[in-house]
Image (cartoon, rainbow, N blue to C red):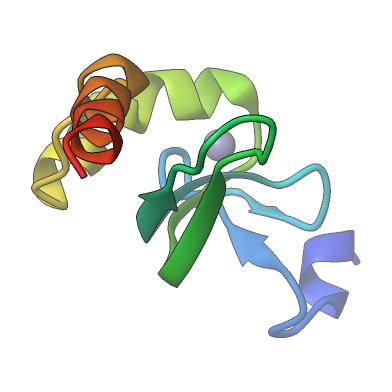
Length: 95
Ligand SMILES: [Zn+2]
């Protein structure tokens, strides 16, 4: 009997190729966070309001194939820390 048949519900299914697997797990997660910036030397903090895995994959190759589709279906736009950090620094300096 293949090992996948004995796993029952105790496994993941790849969102790209459909394979049943347990490890390693590659996932795309979605989280809503707020950054808190402070005067030096205190380090900034990320407050996480919610976080969830929106897709699971059996390999980095499957993540690579599915990444754009998953982000598009979830209406997620890639953002980068530069503009967020610049705005936050501006807000701290204007107080
Ligand atoms: Zn896969």
